[in-house]
Length: 121
Image 1: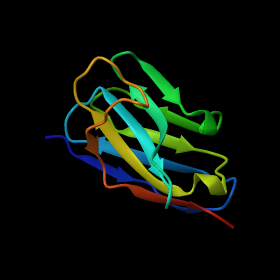
Image 2: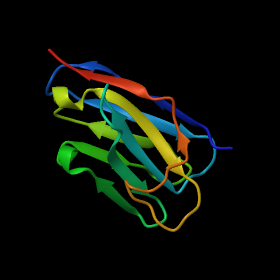
Image 3: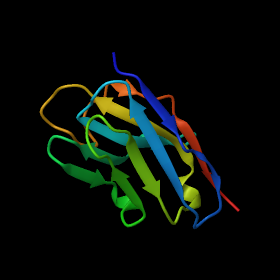
């Protein structure tokens, strides 16, 4: 049973920074960050493929957000810089168990509780 615990959300002014953290109860090889604003569909933000040693960043946050993780036993991070009002959403950490592919469109089956990120003046 995998449990994900998120932290790091909050309020920040445009241009500010936040770092989200996600700790998993057991090693997970494929993890990612997703976000959902009220009335919007869930949007993939960034994916970390620990086995492949690769990351994927959504076009909307490239150059501003960075996903990182030392290994499958360590927390997953999302460093968010130059935050914009459109980044406001609930951010969810997710993990995929098994499978042979790790992408934003993969079927992540373990989800954290979510952490609110609000970017406004």
